[in-house]
Length: 501
Image 1 (cartoon, rainbow, N blue to C red):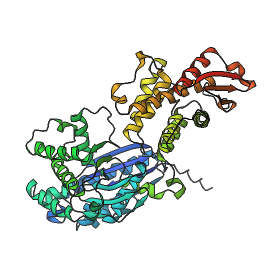
Image 2: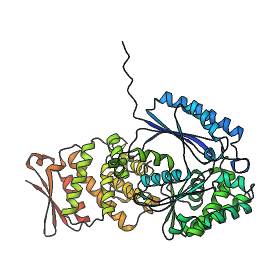
Image 3: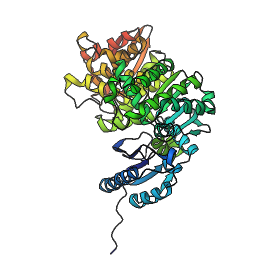
Image 4: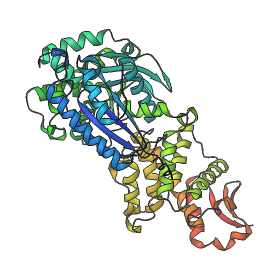
């Protein structure tokens, strides 16, 4: 009798053979909002000598193949459903690249796509589209072997270019002379077509060494939110930082170098140099660091069009809601309940504000398992540091504050951390308080159970806002419900009252 075919797991993995690192990332499933379940890299330096010798270094090849053997074993242990494998600049440029790829394919058991420069640029852009809400600017993906530049507007991607300015490649081509590297970078970037359209727009910095620069900037500036994705620096400040960093690294005076892995430290000055000349040529307004790049772009490309069109933040919030809330359906009802509240109370709301409110509704009950004394601070940390994209740091803080106020209330003894509140404007903090007050009423009424909120309604009469309970729910009315609703009504400039129908 034939054995039944084992069920294929939903998980998906990407083996990324880069010029500096070889990495395995396993995701829970192919979805609009990717959830990483495993992430490991080996810094092999495959592209260390390609510019000077035309070859992948023997020791780097051995190290990379050893890493791939472990990755294949991990894939078996984790029973990964589907595996994608890609290779970038070092493998496409080196004369012995095909031999290495053949050996790597035998180990991995899958075909490896050697990305062309334009293809790599496109996937980097798709990665940014998947992780940044309505991006508008130039994506720059700095790897070990190359720099890809490509223009992106919303979900539209233009033709990209690839330049041999990766950190390892630049170090090799310049024979470890920053002066020579400066000349190479200046000449290559001066004619880079995508940079000519970058003025006053955003430059999205992708790649591990640029993220290392951001990590140092976060430490030196005292910035409190330790989230790399979406970290933004005004271009003028980034230019000053890159110049200063290049000098400090060259003279071994950088105090925060321990924040960067040993293998990346020698490359910091080259990455800073490239960023410096990108800013000088492109004159962008802001530098935004993105942890979403080629791997995420590759998977985003596999999604059906209907999935790609979804809002990544809302999808991530829905995932958290299903995983951590008492009732996923209640959170969806809360969206409709606050829609009605804002409409009846005539609270003005832009499209982006409505989007954040909906996401906050979905996350409003994720802290219920935490001890009551710590729900506010714990959920604030969970949301501000959440591993999801399509959101700025300011927007993270707004959603986190909304849920914090839901749990902690508004007493002076339970104020949110100043570092988080400092990320939002006063108007955003006031709106977060309003939303938190709405959550406090809704969750008190319903005990987070579905079917209750749809049976309550809002009415207005002159300056009065009324919460109307259907007859079957009148026993849910209590003084505490009334006092919380009056507090909510005051926040929208009304008096509040409870009505039993």
